[in-house]
Image (cartoon, rainbow, N blue to C red; front, side, top):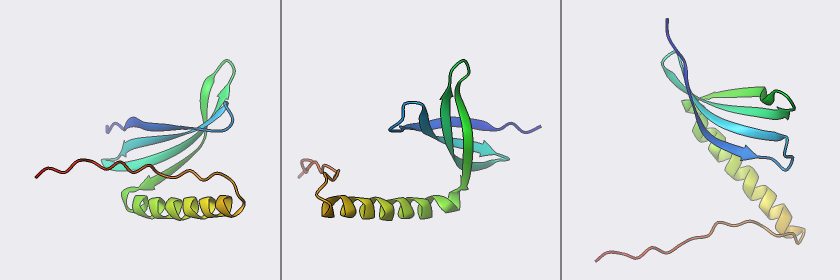
Length: 97
């Protein structure tokens, strides 16, 4: 019998306190799989997974690219609408001679 292992990578909070997305690394049948779980808080039960999307290792780079493109489009639209745009902060590290 083969066991499946899971490790929570990160919890992405939502604007709603009763919803979140969990990024989980699973090992299923000897293969590494990333699962995105949409969970909701249910009184008396706690966090309950509503939907799970599993991505194999080959899909991760494409997902990263698609999310990056979507983030840039959202930021551009916010900027055009005069809204604040979140940008990354770049920290200059000292160089060693």
